[in-house]
Length: 124
Length: 363
Image (tube, rainbow over all chains, first blue to last red; front, side, top):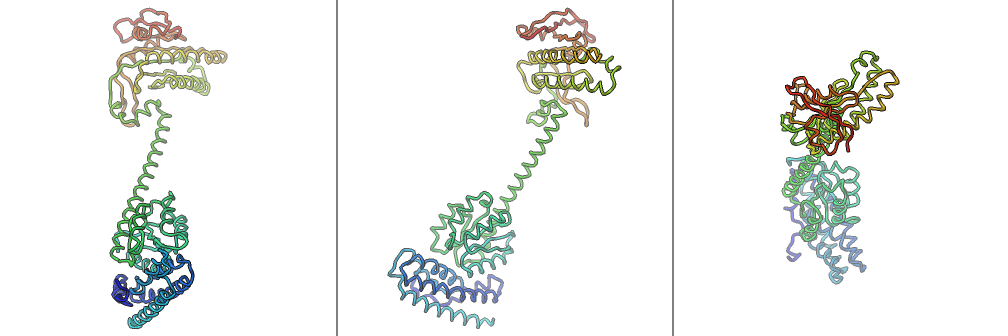
């Protein structure tokens, strides 16, 4: 699947999550806040890793970002993080360049904005 | 809500994932503990191995990853039984297979689906509950066995060891209900005991009797005899029941000569204290009915038959240090004993006289 086809924010993931905790939107909002706080660090770690030669250093933040992004419905960011994780795992230096990290940073900003927008819309 | 409750340990380095899992598990009615990596998880598990009912373990973590954590858990006797559900991304399914091979109970893929989580948790908690019940049952069994062993030990103080053994054996009930078997009966008592009992003060009486019984008891055990009863100075022992003994006549005779040998120095000491006591034994062989006799509340394991009467009568006919052997018993171990015939004895209750021999020595 092409990353471009995926939504920046799949709101149905957040709705489903809300439903599975008995409609507790405050929980979802808190979760988004935790994601926004931790995700920024992981993006920064990815950026630091691609400027070096240690592809292993890339795997862990990319993996965590992938997994938590999927949890909050940031589908496109999750897919991009996954690609960087696997580039790191497989040692594909060409696919783990600063340009990829920059694209990830841009997507992170877009996803963060979409999540903040969802949060304010949800009336919390 | 699940059918089961318990305490779950969520192990994931991502705070977001821990938040979600913790909340979903709380919704299911579980208490949740959290760990950021395998090292923390193992520390919590080892600190409270009995408190945690299920572990949700992320595969990829810093410090100690899911594999290593799982391997460490399975190598640890105290925590290896706790179910582990691996939590991984869909692209890590190969690693999940490896985890199942390493002993993981189940797996979940991220993002977590609440309903699948509920189903997996239920299954794991049920398995854990089953394991705990089984462990509890085994513990009860162990305690029961300890109690039975203790009772057996106590019982063997009151009963002859063979009978204590018989009561707790598989065929015990059948044998207790009554059976017929050829046995050798030895009846022992003391010459001069009645007048001794009249003269001696109670302390002296019990001291002498105690010494005599102790010597007798040791000889009975050494020869594998079944003690039927003590009655003052009289002691009845039989052989070949409940434990079969091919050499039952020989055992009885060897026991009797052992007792006679050990009695001599004792009698010597008593003589110096002014008591004249002699030791006599009657031994007969024949069929008897054996089993539980008596009444509810006071049962004995006893032998009933002419053989016991004959042994008892031979014993009362025996002079000091004589071991009187019935003719039939002599016939069965002729080549092993040196005997002197004592002729025909008129036995009360038997119509015909009985010939018997005194045992001089056993070869």
